[in-house]
Length: 119
Image (tube, rainbow, N blue to C red; front, top):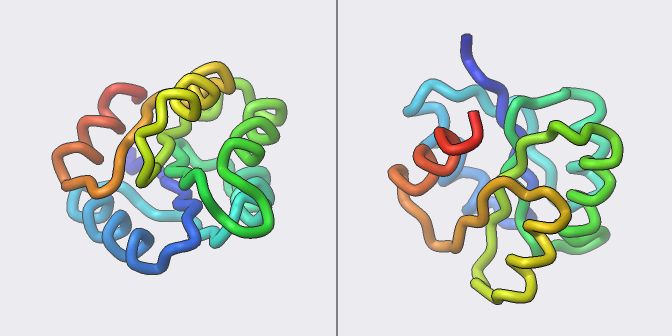
C-alpha cells in the first residue's frame, strides 16, 4: 500500500524536490503546507503516514508544529528538515519525538533511507 506524505516547508523548491523524489519511490504526497500552522491543520485533516517538517518557517516554526502534532497523535512519524545542523535544535527535536533529522541539501538516497528507518 502506498504511504501518504505531508510536506511542511516554506520553500517551493524543497516541495518540488521532495515531491519528485517521493513519487519516484512510490510515495504519495497528500499535502503541501507552507508553514507549521498549515502543517498542523493538514496533519489533523489528512492523517498522513509520514511528515517532512522544516524547522524555520513563518507563522509557526517546525518545532512548535511537531509539539502540537505529537500531542494530537503520539505515533506521528516526523522527519525534520534543516539547513542548520545545530546540535541544540537536533536535541530538542529528538525530545519532541522527531524520528529522523535530515540536513539540507539532501538527495534521493538520504530521503528514502530516512523513510525506511521509521516505517
